[in-house]
Amino acid sequence: MLCYFQGYHDIVQVLLLVLGEKKALPAVAQISLFRIRDYMLPSLSPAVKHLHLIPAIIETTDPELRQRLGNIQPFFALAATLTLYAHDIQEYSNIARLFDFLLAQEPVVAIYLIAAMILSRKKELLEIPEDEPEMLHFTLSKLPTPLDLDGHILHATRLFKDHPPESLPLGAWKHIPWCSVLKTSRDRYRKATVEDAVYLFDKQSQQIRTEERRKQAIDFLWSHRRSVGSVALAILVGAASFYIGKKGLDTSIWYYVGRVQRALKRWI
Image 1: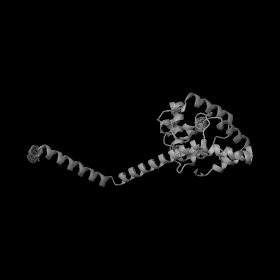
Image 2: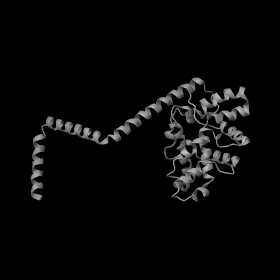
Image 3: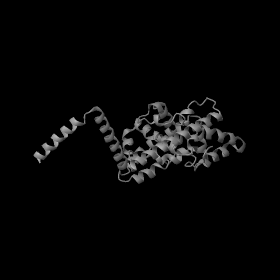
Image 4: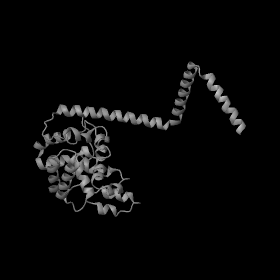
């Protein structure tokens, strides 16, 4: 039922190298179902919702930097978060160390980590001219160098403790579906079953289909807004006429309409 995404092999590769094939197989299944399930749905829209937690985290700690990044969508972090940083970190010892950290935390901490990395680069980011958003996006899409991994881990841990997901501004946490892995895998000691994962996967897939249908309906109405507006106005006028006739108000209304017309003619 899970959908492959570009970069999934980077995660699997780390587990194969560290655990060996026999132990890696169940680990890959567990991580796929309970850590990165949102990235293996029929659409990447849930992953995009994860990314919108990043500006909310930055807003809580550095409004100045948040304002500077205001027009930059957080898509720059997609590759790193999708692959649990395995795509961007090439050093074996670093990625193994990072997996130790991430897999010992709840899934949302991976988002706090990218926010910590962005905050650590404030000086560099503020020096980029405001009229060069492409350069800003390019810089954000790369991990900081040199990579102070333990420093970023400590910073992310502190951010998560001081500003838990429920406290984030901009309604960011509310936009995460209840069936998202970010909310259903918060208890690291709860033993969930494959059946649980299948149920949640189906629920989130249904939600995606509902959102897509709603978006298509809104896009259709917007693209045909003039025609829709004319039809709605005709219906409104017809309903009003029916109501006026039923209540016997038409004579009085036409009397006042006539008086207004005569007054306008005199004024003109």
